[in-house]
Length: 153
Image 1: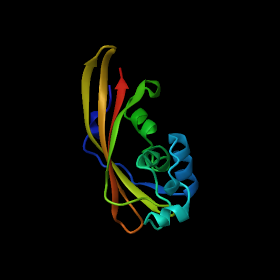
Image 2: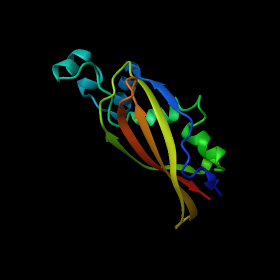
Image 3: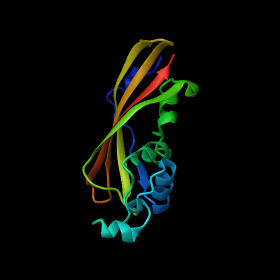
Image 4: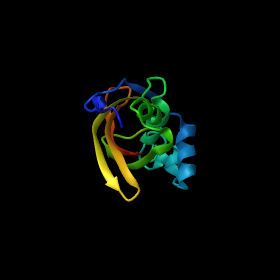
């Protein structure tokens, strides 16, 4: 059973410095050969100041940027009482207000919105709904990420 006292809590800030190599690595992992993810000249020709992060890039913030703050997703769910081997990624969506480029220093605040217990074919599971608001070094909101993590009982 997950610790429901986390519902409504805003957790410690996470930090992530965006590096061009990580943008390229994610584009490679996605199999996306769009040059705006790799080549600064191609990105400038398309109207951007530098290469652009793929739309799913904020997923990296949760898994790499939160470790120092103790809000890396798996560690957080384990702290809340989940068995790490029973955690599944349910869904994630992004609402963009700006683009992410190399050199950006991203600060994010994660909030646990709700924990809903459901009965599935394989038994009970908790659906942990979260929202993360990410700001760049100019304190501009660049993206809000909403995610559901599934913790099987």
